[in-house]
Image: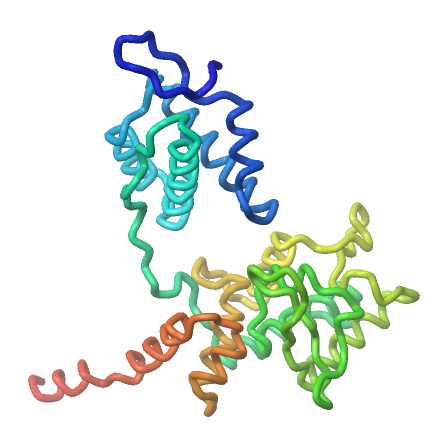
Length: 310
């Protein structure tokens, strides 16, 4: 592949991306390793697409066609992330004088702000927990994970990053310090209710002689015994526990526990501000989605209209 250049129309066209240029772009991105990897993979996907189309000097029109292609083959969130990566890439190429910003003002996908996953009911949560065999170390772990997730509104990444030493005391409360989404340090915490604390301690004790610096949640399979769980593993084990209790629904996932925490808090007297703090939302508008959903559920408009007609 040749080096990316902006060339006059009378000069023979060359492939516009080189591995060297992509490496320079990766170094330019000011983000966490996962962000750098995501952006790099998105640009590679775009390059593969233009190769398949025999496009050597892409234009804004090509970006629009590619965007429409993504809309038909990928979920809105994925499409949006790919277009954001192209925005960053071509903004950078223009700044460096390599290639014009052909992605400027290209819109991605419209993201529906409504939740894609459903919350669980109190009965469902109780049934899920009751179905777990807590006589085994693995069962104790899964019980603790679900308990802490549904009371603390945790994300899988927060559970994955937690260590045993992160269980501490704050303002006379037993808490778990967590490294939240987009955070570099464990500066936030969730309070551990007595049943959740009991479940966590039972799980930790069942692991035997361990040190405080070890991961809070680890694998107990023969192949990965003692290794820190991945976010994917946490999501999978939670989903398995749902299915074991008879709840095999595509709209129920590990993230449903976070939705459940918010919903139950609001239903049982928690304020909007309480719930925002519980979920660690930076923008209160994100929390307002839960309020809107509850207000819609309580809205009896259809029943009132039906009673008038029928």
